[in-house]
Amino acid sequence: MKTTEQISISKAEWAVMEIVWNSSKPLISEEIIAKLAETHFWSEGTIRSLLNRLLKKNALETEREGRRFFYRAAREKSECLRQESFAFLDQYFGGKLTPMMACFLGDEKIGDDELDRLEELIKQRREERK
Image 1 (tube, rainbow, N blue to C red):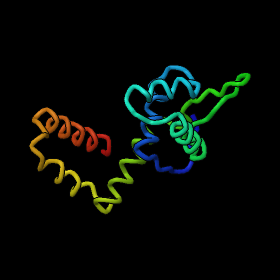
Image 2 (image 1 turned 60 degrees about the vertical axis):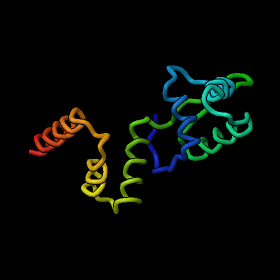
Image 3 (image 1 turned 45 degrees about the vertical axis):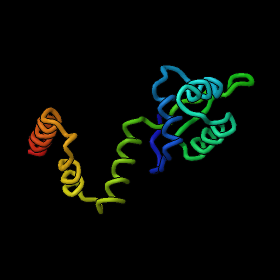
Image 4 (image 1 turned 120 degrees about the horizontal axis):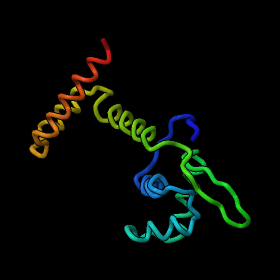
């Protein structure tokens, strides 16, 4: 997979990318449409538009075999998650992690297991920086 400029992927486009990322092989559009039909009420035309937008953004790439186009991710999911996470952080928290964490930590949904894991990650990061 190639890595290029930063892109923004909409919620609908992300649903398409999830299908592609979760597949062990390249998919034809009909397979993507069928998978999305299980969870979304989008028309075939809407899904084809999403595929085209993702191609233009270089999030997907295609390979032609006869009359069929096979779609595969042009970017790793981890790369897109990182970009989207930093875009969220920039947009809503001025790029600062502490206010975002304070916001999330104030939620009662954050359990002790998650707090322990966060402490572990912070400790690990500090060790890596030494």
